[in-house]
Image (cartoon, rainbow, N blue to C red; front, side, top):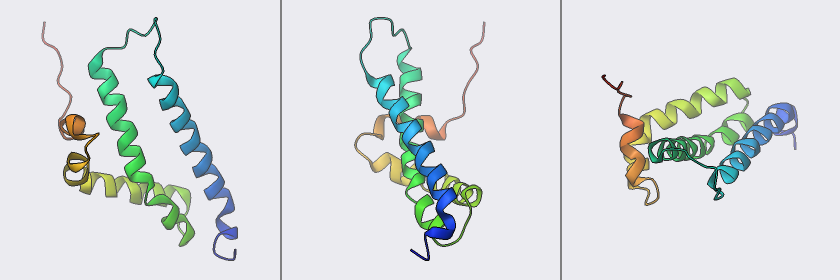
Amino acid sequence: MRLVLPQGWSLWMFHWLDGWITVRQIFRRLPSKKNRTPPAQLAMQESLYYAWKLGVSGILPSIVTGNNLLQAGKNAALFVKRTSGKSLSSEQGIQPFAGLLESEPTSAQS
């Protein structure tokens, strides 16, 4: 309790944000007749969601060890950036989207 209690606000904010992102992604996955989202955009949303979930694996330990929410988020972003090519491409559900995380967006030419 002595480790976690001083970081209560950061932990609460993190769990609220993570829950909001997770629920939003669940609702995006529900079938809908009005959904006209292009497959490429759906793939990008999924890849960003999985990158978020990969990154948050380091946020809780970072907060508990004394970092604030902002610093914990920066540490998690660095973790995702360093491991995206290795970890994400080896995950079975992410493999088709791994290239999207590493490639830069291209603009359509007229």
